[in-house]
Amino acid sequence: MEEYGYAIIGQGAAAFAAAIKADELGLKTVMIGKNETKGAVLGGTCVNVGCVPSKRLITLGNFMDKINFNRFEGLEYYSKIKNFSRIIEEKDYLVGSMRFSKYQKVLAKLKNVKYINDFASFKNKNTLLVNGKEIRAKSILIATGARANIPAIEGLDKVDYVTNEEALSFKKLPKSLVIIGAGALGLEFAEMFSHFGVKVTVLQRSNSILKDWEPEVSYYLEQYLKDEGINIITDTAINKVSKSGKNVKITFSNKGKTREIYAEKLLLATGRKANIEKLGLKSIGVKVNEGGFIKVDGYLRTSIKNIYAAGDVTGEPMLEALAAAEGNKATINASGKGKAKIDFDSVPSAVFTFPEAARVGLTDKEANTGKKIRCSCGVVMFKDLAKAGIIKDTRGLIKMVIDADTKRILGVEIVGENAADLIHESTLAIKFKLSIDDIIDTVHVFPTLSEITKLAALSFYHNIEDLSCCSE
Image 1 (spheres, rainbow, N blue to C red):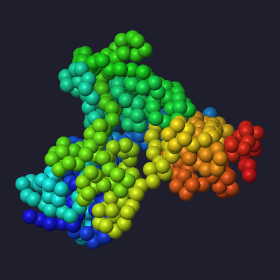
Image 2 (image 1 turned 90 degrees about the vertical axis):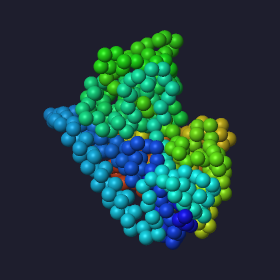
Image 3 (image 1 turned 180 degrees about the vertical axis):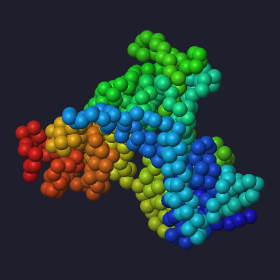
Image 4 (image 1 turned 45 degrees about the vertical axis):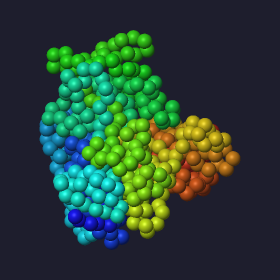
């Protein structure tokens, strides 16, 4: 039997952050890598079948859209795909090079960490079974991630559907695509393929896209996507799917009527499922929630004292950077070196559509009904921002939620050019409990998109349309 101070099950963002921290702390550690996500090898979902490949293709699509939109008068230019298979080959090269430089090389430098490329299951709370061998550890971290959730839809087993993994490796572009689900993943893939010239329809169960976001952000982003030619149908219920020649037929209900739509490909963007089936959690008493994700407390500890969990296997929010932070904090706690927690209110997230959407902190509804805070809200449109006019893209808005009594910033959501970058000023404001006066008192570079945050703060005192380009 091999014995370690710490065992990590997984090989993605949470697992690697945990391994790096464990190595720093001098813990004798074993990382056992495999999980149920088919395309996720060393490095996990993000680098292999998530953020890295999808954002490369999204960037390509956005570049084409910027060229073909002909935003500026007096210029004539266009772009078209010459060789899609070459685009996929280049994407695969990027993934392989990042897997090597950011994971394989990093792992090789961790002197206190041994890597085993295999599955692990629990024999008891301190013992793992790996390919018939027993491995014992004082503390164990579960960081096996999650994979695409496949819903129960009549006929689904008889059609060739795809998830994000397969959609990132199409050998050729389909002529048409139906996406079920209008969360971040569904919208990103919808616009990416639309920019590539694919006819895209999105079917969403709720009455809006990004259903948990501020209604202003959801509404405007939906209009922008529709303006680009993406067909978005909300308030739907999928009844069944079936083959129809070379296409897939999707039968769904919408506002009391039964409708049908046909497409060459069907993409499921219907949430994620925890990779826990092979772990044997039930036999040792590790509790999961109704969605099948591992329950943890504020210190990332499971229902078993020496077993921790981090990353997507614990459920929403599923963010690569958050998974890494959780892996780091869980390792500190498991080692007994401290009691580290995550401040979830200051964790930002983004949707990489074009324009992007980003958020941090509480929504208006969450502040009022959930936290019982008397809040005030301000909305500023990008058309009132000088830089938006300069770059000739005035789509977008910012919504800021503040405590009406203290003026402390509670939440911010942005839809607009570079929203994923712009959100970090608001992230720091929430993390360090800053007020709108702190933002107003900070000089911002003119002309920049980041001024939108200052305009949002100023909007609680002034009508933005009555101000000059630079004010206060």
